[in-house]
Length: 329
Image (cartoon, rainbow, N blue to C red):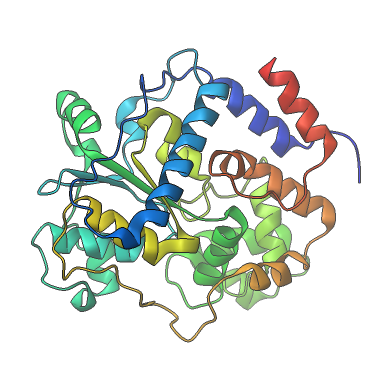
């Protein structure tokens, strides 16, 4: 493998430098635990405090000096508002967002049960309000006083899950918009049907597209980096849940905000329910399809997400630690 720093890693280091132009919240806001009466949540609560402290310390170390260049309204465009419980939820696709939006609808009184809300109603019904629909005064007030929550996922699991969902099943948007462009640019001697429909994108072609600095079509929220979707070091999230412990974290959070006792986080998968869930074993099989150099570049692309949320990077090279060390001095 070449010792030259990959373009993706250079972009990550540049992003770290840009993120140093961020003003952190003055202090980590303590969680209100007045509604927690049950000792069963003790371990979950302790884990949550460790996650919060880790992210805050990371942001304080790397990203603390100046103001961001991105406008605040753009930064909060992925955040949903639930007024009754004064809750802000940043949507991270492929990290339980469909069921989280079902829960928001129940909390808002828009539905009695999460189980009765269809996938289309969740994503296309426009029942939920986003933070960027408020004026700047309303945005600032809610960021300061509402409970802010984000749920994240291991970057490679999230990436492979997105590929499987959008390209291995019929899709009237991703195949013609992304599939056709990917096949046209990255498949030699593509047949006429593939070029016409955009169906059948291979994982190695998807990775080629992802790593291409001149992509034929832009990024998508389903595989965009979490740090670019939710701006964790700017927003200052009060609760950091993980997909790997989704039900436990989500139900603890619901008790924290005083949600109705009968409301539990849904555990069903409403699309492609017969497919095996994307886990580390599934991810390994997909990553074996691409060369080692491209695997490393893919890790580099999501490196900041690995760092922020304390996920183990699958392959860390000495060059990476050296570059980040040079950056922080």
